[in-house]
Image 1 (cartoon, rainbow, N blue to C red):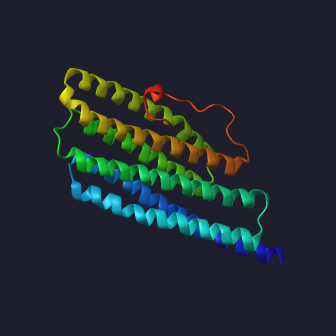
Image 2: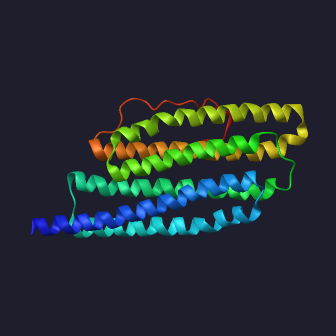
Image 3: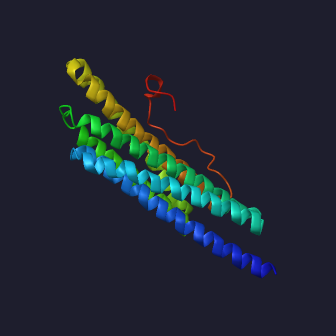
Length: 235
């Protein structure tokens, strides 16, 4: 009987893992397309990102339902329960990252009507590519049970923070040099902040993977390079 329950649990977890990977792929696409829509001034692609967010939300709901069913039917304990709780946290973070990508796409529709701010689009795309790479590695670490790769992702968040800090200073400079840049730079700043928060959420996911594999959350404080939050909106 115990073997039967264990086998059924393994099948349930495999289904949920497949859903997480699928959801993660959609979120990776959302990050990439949101950044590309800004760089290409592509309103249609921005709209694709906005509409695709519904599929991400639907997958989170499905994952929550599958996880709840598995807990009710299999009554997992110890590491098995930890695996289910990790899945729920990963899905919640992915949903929020998808929301940030959608927010970027919304602002793209506004920015296409304004004059470009020199170098900002390319810088935001570089920052988005870094976060998308972190997310891909985090999902790989989850599937492979690779705590070392998850820790590498955790350390890379500092690079995203440093990119954000540099952009923040540039936007301030542009606004001071020419007040006509203020509106565009404010939109761009919020986009950069959205990407920085994507990095934070991805790092949270990496920490959950470390906890899943080792049973212990990282004790060392996460390295942070963002020193602008006191002049930005609250986290």
